Length: 223
Image (cartoon, rainbow, N blue to C red; front, side):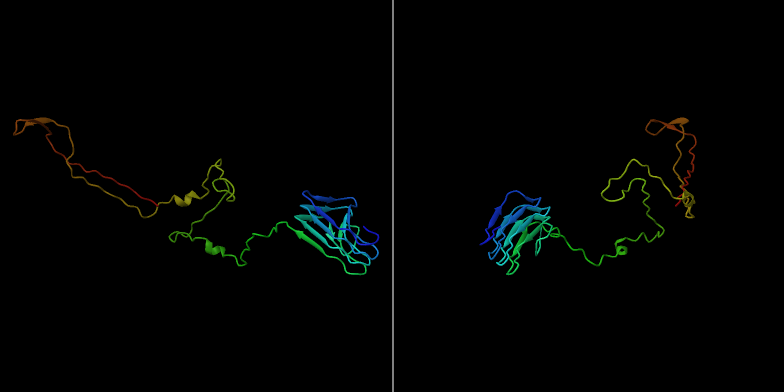
């Protein structure tokens, strides 16, 4: 601060954070007819608490210019005049106020986001209809294992699957029973009871009788 004449300039180019507390003051204020000095601050993070100010005010002269470059500024805000809070001010009581420019280099959290469509897809069109031959089919997730609550969870294989259907409704045989009968006319194999000599002089074992028998095979199919 200067009581008369022009206010001096302050240029802070910091590699670490700027922390202002307990009535801390960065001041290029000019009283009387002098113009306020300029303040330039380049710091990764700027914080101001407990009535700590950054000011370049003037009374009868022009207010100074404040230029701040940072990735984040907290607790201290630009105001037209000084208050009991932490302020950034470059005002003039009788002439032209100075300019305050804060270049915040922090990343915009909304950048890179994709806007969802307003009209959502009809969920009924995303479900495949069941088999046309059986319209009473249902799918029930009981939560007793096998099917996770959502896709991010693993299947719980410690639970045993139980059939909760009414089995009495499925124990009836349908009317489409079929019977098959197979009749064989091949000669039955019987034990030899005698032997004969053929035209080549060889001995052949023969049976006295050559009986035929009928085999019967019955099978049923049920639904």
